[in-house]
Structures are given as C-alpha cells and as structure tokens.
Image (tube, rainbow, N blue to C red; front, side, top):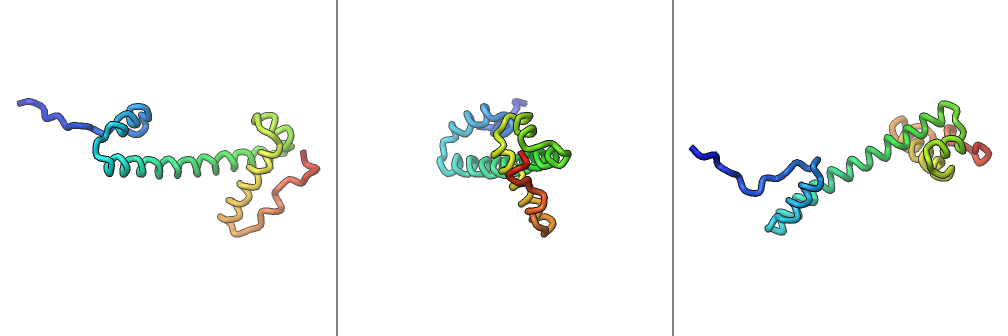
Length: 111
C-alpha cells in the first residue's frame, strides 16, 4: 500500500527560512494571512519576554554593585541605554509587586 502524501505540509516555525519559504508559497491569501498572523503573535510575545529578561539581567548586574558606566562598557551599550534598561526593569518589578520604582534607579552621579 502506498503512503499517502499530504500536500503542503507546514514546516515547523523554528526552521525560519523553510517556514517563510513555505508560507510565501501558500496560494490562498486568507490562509497565508492567518499563518503569518499566528507566527507574528508568537514572535511578538517572545520579543517582549526577551526584552524583560534582558532588562532584568542588567538590573541584577547593577544590583551586584557594578557602576552604570562599567556595566555599559561590559555590555557594549551606552550608559543611557543602561538607564533605560534599569527603568524598564524597575517598572516591571513595580508592576509585579505594586511598589515604587524610584528607589532602585541610579542617579545622574552614579555613572
């Protein structure tokens, strides 16, 4: 008995190039739109989580006593970017705990 072949098997999204090639070839525009939207939503959630993890890592390093300037140098970003990350981490912590974010942020002299 011959194996039944399923046409247009959807590749795993983790294989981005294969998936995008497959998606680009989906003939039905509604189906192509639906698949693209599903993947965008998954990736957007992942980007938000990655951003939070990165900000938390910067805040943890800062909390270990590393100055903003040294931390920026170690991470290859500007001191301004470190301040942004610390502010983001503070807002997320405040949202989780209901507390204030002001106390843990570095001042202008802490560089």
